[in-house]
Each structure stands twice: as structure tokens, then as C-alpha cells.
Amino acid sequence: MEKADRYLTPEQLKTVLREHTGYVCRRTSPNHDDLYPNNEFTLRGEFCGLPLDIVFAVEDDHVTVITQMSQHSDSLRGQFYEYVGDTAEDAVEHARS
Image (cartoon, rainbow, N blue to C red; front, side):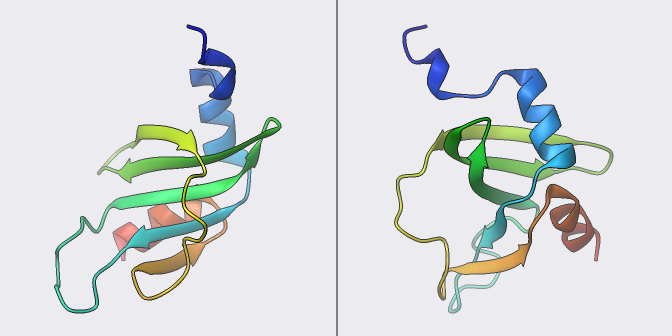
């Protein structure tokens, strides 16, 4: 409970995933195909005044939030991350293609 103000409420998460933009990527490994799930993404940005990484999975008929955390890595760019877009909708389109 003491750390609850560091994270978004379920309603805030829904709003962020539907309406906000950030940096959306997924983990990859250039030397190991299928090492990471193709439907799991990270949305990085500042939401409701909090700098957060929101990890979510795109399922057949819905999006599931796996976790939200303070931004602890310096970058989500580079050879181990594939840029997908700026919104959760971009991730949905990427997962379905």
C-alpha cells in the first residue's frame, strides 16, 4: 500500500493503453528466433505524471497488463529491442500481422 502512489490504477491503465502515446517496443534476440514472445510489448512514457514502463500482452481478443514498473533501464533501444510504434494500438497491429 505504501508504494501504491508510484503506479497507475486499473482505470488509469485502461486510459493510458487506449489514449496515450509513448515508446512501444518488444524484446528480441538477434541470434535466437522465438526466444521472446511475439505478443509481449513494453510501453514507456510519462503517464499521469509518473515515468513508467507498462508491460502488456496482446491476446486474441484483449490486452493483458503483465506489470508496470519504474523505468529502470537506461534505454529500450538497440539490438535487443524492436521498435513497434507509439501506441498500444500499434502493438496490437504488430501482433496481428
